[in-house]
Image (cartoon, rainbow over all chains, first blue to last red):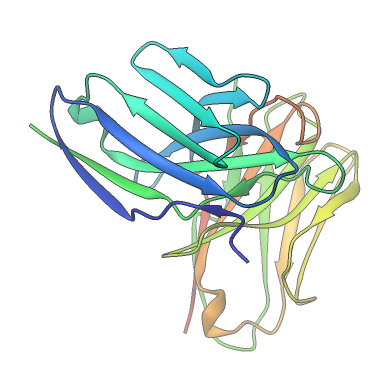
Length: 113
Length: 115
């Protein structure tokens, strides 16, 4: 049972435009959400996070939006740069037996110069 | 500050053999988690250790086991290897157990190929 889903395996975006990566979750006990970025031959690195008490968190070019009623979060990258080409994983955690980080399947983002 | 170190980086085994992977967390980090990454499956949680105790375990068969030592270094073992065990095994460390607001710091992974 995939509790965190990233339905788009890949996404291509023109350099300078906005990249929007989506993530859905099914477990209502999740209350903390993170995005990780992974380059080939490297481990994932933390990008940005959001707590369920917020609906938006911004860090430079990266903004994460959380819609709790829809159980949906998205990562916006503006403007997109070639170095943003990577696989992006969303992850979620909660309390009461859901403490471990549960990851989605990832979306491969390709920025076209 | 040294990052998370995983050894070996690459290894090839045959079906039925066993394998042990090692992970040295960032200095001062007491929590170590293990994940399996396969194409199309994302990162599947294996287990988490904190202060030598297993805190959480994922839905993997008993062939997958792990432990953590007093210096926080961790090992995972897979016995009776199957072709489907071919994957990238990632180790991650954090100061505190996951579930809080701390992020995980990942190593580069150990790529296991089972022939």
